[in-house]
Image (cartoon, rainbow, N blue to C red; front, side, top):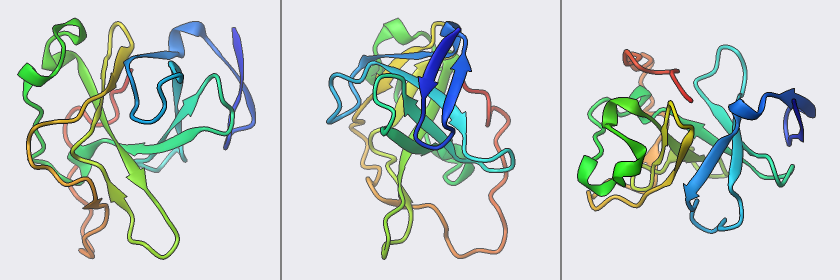
Length: 152
């Protein structure tokens, strides 16, 4: 068991196999190599990408297909070491600042291989926005894709 100090969940114990390894740097955080995915709340689509090394570092992330069902990633832009796209878990980092509408970064997704638990952040060549609105003002929630919630 591994004991980890977290930003939002206090001290937790996890299996070493729960750790995600960052082989392809999260932009701006080159020394952060080990993370956990933790739930925001049981009924929430948001996850915390919590650094194992730095307790104060936790990103808010979401499955982009929950908000943008047409989202696609060109396989040619992702290293073969991460396997086939059917093996990927895809998350987008969210920005939740005061005075700003919440957004997610579709241009630079996090991609992990569900089996190996290795991955990182990738800047796509497609013209996806860096600040895509998380909420459209619609009263209807987007339909959940079949693979939503299946993360490494």
